[in-house]
Amino acid sequence: MPGPAQVVPDEADAATPHAWAAALGVPVTGKASGAASASEPIPAADISFLAAGEYHENWLVRAPAGPVVLRGNRGGAAGSQLGLADQISYEYRVLHALAGCGATPRPLALAPVAVWPEGDPARASTPDAAQTGGALLMQWLPGRPLDYRTDARHAARVFAAVHAAPVPPAVELPPPGPVPHVLPRGMLAAQLAPVAAIVAESSALLDRHVGHPLAPRMVHIRHALLDYRDRVARLAGDTRHLFAGETPVIANTEVNSGNFLVPEGGSAASSGDMAAPCGAWLVDWEKAVVTTRYQDLGHFLAPSTTLWKTDFTFDAATRAAFLEDYREALRHAGQPVPDAEECAAKADVMVRAVLLRGLSWCLMAWHEYAGGGRALAHADTFRTIERYLGNIAWFLR
Image 1 (cartoon, rainbow, N blue to C red):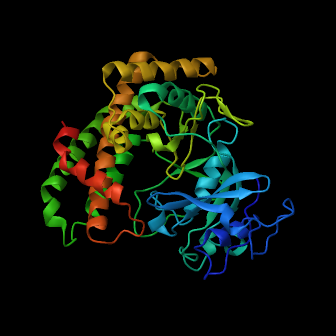
Image 2 (cartoon, rainbow, N blue to C red):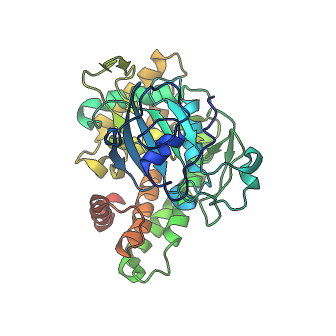
């Protein structure tokens, strides 16, 4: 595993992609670099904004050896859905674990949240020692977002490849809270009782802004979600045995269409000299956990996922076809294949749990957007949140 870069930008520059690129060994105009592989510095114009999510910003760096992606984190617990003190190092760790599966970007370099004393995060004076949150450099991959109508079979193959990857040691975490979690070195977070873990996480999200000045406007939606939370909590108890004997896998748990990249040409497609053996790649690994494979399958099938960026929902026929494609991909990879009925039943349980988590996040985020407390705010995201909450009865039917 490549060692992380032991350089971070000066505090005044830490938020700029040029400063992070220099810290990660990519030479840029006006910045020192420890990289010897490039003979000329990269002009400032060769670093351009790609996209930003709720917790990260992504930049395209046109390096002499080829384009790479610079991914910066907001920092602290506010920059981590898992409530981790060093989210960017966690994502680097996940990408390294998946580097051989052929369906994810390769991690190239890491500038962690801070250079911790003796390499131990627990020895840091504060878990938010570097408010910028650090950055990582990873392989750039070409492609467009996934189309559920034509590309679901590619997603099935991606999941089969990812779920076949060796799983590093993992430890269960409580729901994110005010104190950022510090994971032991080399370990991933685990959700070995997935439905119960999602209930706990959703409860924390629903309780986060109870005293918010705008909370009365959403009290009926909160009550509807609390009622649904109780239903899913009973489901967790009733179905715990279904997942107890499974071999855990690394699951992404956030598999909306925009997190897939589908190169032109379809299955085993390529762009230049980069091939996508599964027909697509899956990026954005900030919330990956060691858990049941059905977290990914259920999240992919849930209407709260498909309607986030598209107008598509799976019906019974398209759902069954996707699950059969997944089973066939496992079979082709020489992996154990779950029974079709078992696969459908477990995926359905996770669809219901994923709905709870997604809608609970929407209610939490609504208070931050409406109250002006969102550090990275996106108007289209807020519109989608309001659309989801305005149609809560349809989602929970």
